[in-house]
Length: 170
Image 1 (cartoon, rainbow, N blue to C red):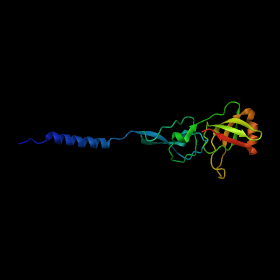
Image 2 (image 1 turned 180 degrees about the vertical axis):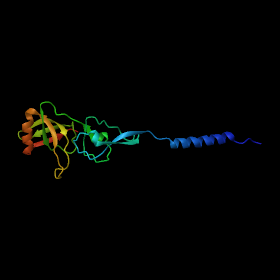
Image 3 (image 1 turned 30 degrees about the vertical axis):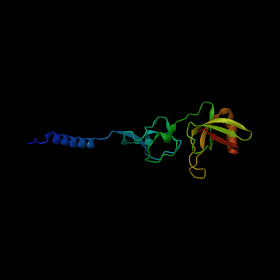
Image 4 (image 1 turned 90 degrees about the horizontal axis):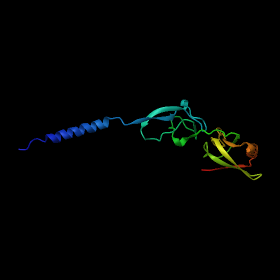
């Protein structure tokens, strides 16, 4: 006669209890920022703009919110990921900010090459605030581009008269 398989039964019970305990354990979560209301492109992101939610760890890359601005419009409830924010860019000393159309893809900190067509001249620029909206829409806002002080008047006049083209470096 063979003894009853006690070790097998004990092993099976331990396996079931272990699997049940594994299933009941809480997965690691982290606090993650989402927009508490709509944040328009170019706006600095403050604590009032952020609501924190718990998400499983590693589900989204963590953003750095200190000194960040919205690179695009962020709708209420959207996660604030590194791809929708940009660092806040300060106006360099001695430069002026000129509103102009540079294209939707420009984000704060991007370098642009401003080409004045008459007289032919190139001037470096730095995007301070991105362009928002479509030119035909009511919510359109041109980008703010910093230009050296000695060229600011020429760039502003060329932009106003349609003689300025902005080339964006990707």
